[in-house]
Amino acid sequence: MGSASTTKTSRTQEILRRAGESLVGGVNSPVRAFKSVGLEPLIVDYGKGARLWDADGREYIDFIGSWGTLILGHAHPAITAAIQEQAARGTSFGATTELEVELAERIKRAIPSIEKLRFVSSGTEATMSAIRLARAFTKRDFVLKFEGCYHGHADSFLSEAGSGLATLGIASSPGVPQALAALTLNAPYNNLTAVKKIFAAHPNKIAAVIVEPVAANMGVVLPAPGFLSGLREITERAGSLLIFDEVITGFRLCYGGAQTLQDITPDLTTLGKIIGGGLPVAAYGGRAEIMNHVAPLGAVYQAGTLSGNPLAMRAGIEALKILEAPDFYSDLNARAEKLTRELRAIISASGVAAHLNSTGSLATLFFTSQAVGNYADAKKSDTQRYAAFFCEMFERGILLAPSQFEALFLSAAHSDVDLDLTLSAVKESLEGLAAVRT
Ligand code: KE4
Image (cartoon, rainbow, N blue to C red; front, side, top):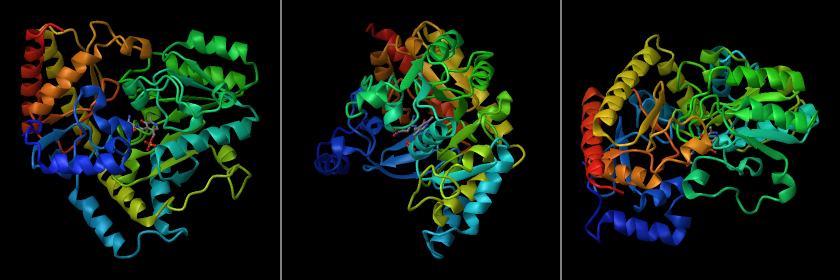
């Protein structure tokens, strides 16, 4: 497995050359460019289970899993069959089908805070629409987000954001009008004092607080005890909406949202990734009193040609059917617990300054000796060491996120053999790093 390409005329090189001519940076999403780890983008040929094969037949154990989407692994047979069957019946009608009603009903049963929802085709569409709705419902303009959290690339979110912006060191994106950027307020994650100060400075002006209930776009950072309940209290008192961006955590940690485990009821929730079974599906939803302000019932306009398309709905339904199995999450989370326990033992024995943050099947290995509780902590990580670690693992056929500020996603498809190979590769890679002083 692995061993980055050396033959210059490989199929990968030929596709990379063409990709560079037609796609910006050879990719359709910046974090895929592998820039921060000093490699050329991976060109994938196909995936099966927990494995990916690149254009030159090199095999990898995949911990990106389409950025958390593939909790069931690549090309799950039941999902593939469902897609094939639906494709023969039509992929998109631009009209309602029972399939979108069925998927919505499944999501509502799993996440009771969602009384009504609207399907869209990307997490960005979901969060962008949720913010527009919150501004309309509260008649307020400011939104509060958290440094290092990432909510997609809509204008209101591109300041102090995580994921690809953190990876590329972009503090705020050009092209966002200053007048709009000024309406986005940022606070450090896990810092309620800062949140209270911002609310005091903007009385009756903040439409919503949007938060990842478990942050995964600055790397994985857990909410401190009381942080999320504190946000609930502050927003309730201020007449602002609380939006849980569960695009990553939705159906990742349990059959529901992180809100299910944290017993907190947000006003709106955004979902994506897992609910589409590998096809482009996202959603925003919440109290009917709020959602009924969206067109055609209300005046808040949001639309989408492929929203709720039957092909993607069918894939999502099939995925949630499998995830609903009684022991799915207890099994996955037990395997994840075993993996992270053994990873911590290897890290400790290696003597390398590294910290593993994890919850359920989400984890990030930060190359820092300190605990990581917010974006400022995360940015103290040695990103060069992370890049060196990434390359060592990549050489050994283990594909991690090509960024210190992303997560490792364990799926139900990762076998004991995959995990044993991964642990051996981590041990060897860290030993390699320990031998090299950077
Ligand atoms: P998309 O527009 O990329 O479907 O979703 C945006 C989004 C919204 N909210 C959260 C919490 C998210 O994590 C994301 C997207 N996640 C990143 C990975 N960290 C997508 C990967 C990429 O940008 O290519």
